[in-house]
Image (cartoon, rainbow, N blue to C red; front, top):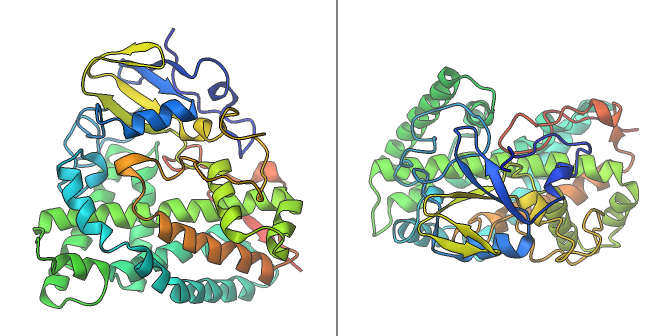
Length: 394
């Protein structure tokens, strides 16, 4: 029998328990009445992500939870031109190829000193609060927001506009009107920004795209900029906040990271695996009848890949429900897999590798300022995390 996607969690760091039980491929009931499939197995999820018979097109797939309807950001409709995460090759390939040149490992590593400076500056702000503050608004959100603004050439004083509008778009309980207003605000601002870059290019990523030999028109640039702006700060911000929450609840792991007993790179990969903030999974639509995991998938079926469950697959990771910063967590699916693997993953890794040790080093006695059960969780958002993380230190 097809059941809705499980959402309720009994532990803030674990996926819903029913995601981890039962068959690795099972029927899934969608809010619109569609019956598709849910994948919780690491190997099957990876197989789907690599199979061109499954489409990423927004107009072909459904989402497993209710969320506000807004033009250009809604399943059943074509994505904005340039919003390439919701496209298949060859359209996806064209955009991805142009962006790959902007997100090279070399360019991301060149940003490392500036990222470390931003982290240090935000830690100064945190320390200026006295002996307690909300880690989300003071540190976890500003760090990636400031980085992505700098990368795209957005004035830092405008980051509040992006943070507010992106948050509204990701809220499951936002009204259609509020979501539409947030989208209009973002697109209007980005349109003006693109116009300024065409007139006076800088050395930022958006200016680089404006001056590409294979020129994109303004509508395409708008879709690209929207994707990078929203995805570029919301995901990392929630990893920083939720990751800190997890470390404070596992003090022996925090101490191992603080002392250098585990490599920072290893710690980042394990936190990505353990937390897996894309809580409602990644969707694909079958482009033909096919067999998957012993089941017959029909043309048009939406298959939801539960990344949190796949990253807790005991056949892939030993003791998967244990946070172990020393483990080799490579092969997790937090950044996806295949042609749609996250383009900004190297940037996210650098931000986390800079932020976690610096935070724990500056505040060795950092602790929660409220009981853990009072930390407000983002059950109501497309990207999981915490709405706030009250902390204190001495």
